[in-house]
Structures are given as structure tokens and as C-alpha cells.
Image 1 (spheres, rainbow, N blue to C red):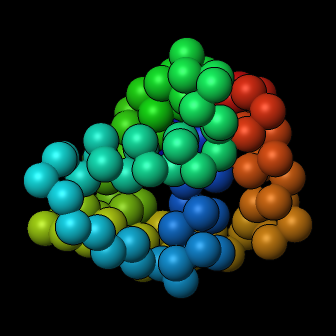
Image 2 (cartoon, rainbow, N blue to C red):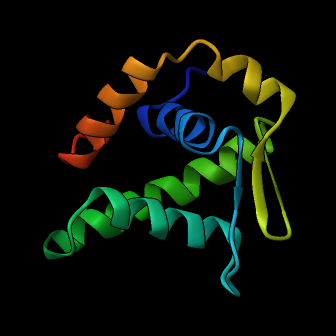
Length: 110
């Protein structure tokens, strides 16, 4: 498998460190879109709408890819790490996660 992008690594670590591997939500939107918009609005202020939209798009693509590679599972109102995703995220420390989160929140997506 190819190397994970910064956004993909962040997403795995976000689900793991913030939600212990499972994110529950209630929304009629597609799970990928809902989670992408939620995370982007958490990280990027509303006044930087263009960056926020760009990040949401990147996160939605990352969710799709991570699902295809069976690192996360999307079902109903839940997005969770698979056992494969959990084994990968073990290599991302809390400190590395915080660094990724900080970089992404300043617009460094790559």
C-alpha cells in the first residue's frame, strides 16, 4: 500500500485519540461529508471559508480511500477504525497527532 498522506494520518489519529476509535453522529448527510465538514469547521475558522472547504474536500476523499483500504468502516451513524486501522494508528503518537492537527489548522494540508 502507498504511504498515507498527512490528511489520512491525521484522520486515523483523530478518530483514535479524540474518540477512542469510533465516531457516532446523527445526520441525514452522507457520513463522509458530515464528518469532513465537522472536522474542517473544528480546525479552520469560518472567516477562512475557502481553506475550510478545501480541507473538508480532502478529508472526504481520505475517508473514501481509508474505507477502500479497510482502515476505517463507515456504517449507519458510525465511523470506526478497523483492526487494521487500529494497528496502523498505534504508530501515531499523541504528540505527532497534535503536530499534524496544528499544521492542518494553519492550512498546511500536504
